[in-house]
Image 1 (cartoon, rainbow, N blue to C red):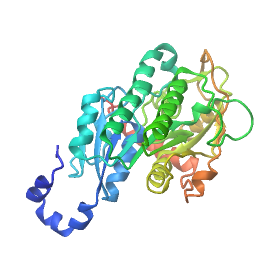
Image 2 (image 1 turned 60 degrees about the vertical axis):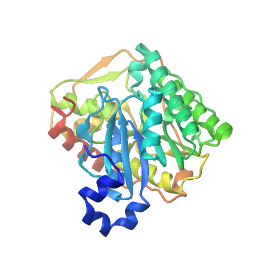
Image 3 (image 1 turned 45 degrees about the vertical axis):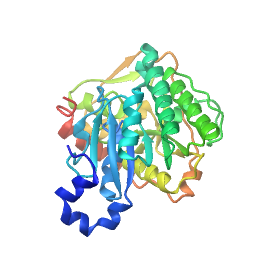
Length: 344
């Protein structure tokens, strides 16, 4: 794997360097945490395609991550670093060694079901891990931006009005509570220490490379294996789905055009119940016959709806480009080709 030093670039890629030396001189050094995960890897791939950034991917490679998620790991402007965000010495060393300009913080445990059975691990990774990175950013003192990737679940499901970025946070499960707590730490470092932060909160993201515990890849994988679709409760909970490429575009736009200290919702109009989702996916994958369903006990608390307003982001010029039908077709195609061996 390539280590980015000016000596390395001059010695091994001199012709490229001299041809593009003005671009390289001003390339930003971006630390992406959790860049082998679902959204993080799609973001890393998109960022490398711009040829404007050197990307350092810090990931502990837990069960839902994979090095295979990176399209071109030999890219000379990409470096993978195996490690955990809770390791302060490692994070500090990465920031100082590579002169990090921007931190994009994806790394987190995110499966709601597991947060009910193993909540303390979520506290350690999502809260303590975020705090470690913030402390390193404070000590480093030379950061252009700390972009924190959060979730719509921090709002909870209270009320019928769309949640704007100033709404009170009312998380209802251990996962969303740890994400809300991490947000509060991020904001505190903005006010107390002047860390230049931005926070994003998105609806449910779907697409290729998402681990199969999430609802869309889970349903696809179950149908591919001729299994019944598992439904929590009666499947009435509403969810809004946004394709990962659109989310990545939103994050890139916020990274370059967003205002420090602000929060941006990344929303979607593609809203449906879990039962409607099961029927829709089945209609694309099963040509005839009844939909196989298996009902399971619902979560101790299952939010009914996440209803957010994304006008603030749209004012920056963002609009989702992928219809749910098109995005789902791409997702089904990817899992059909990859799900059997991708995370092995």
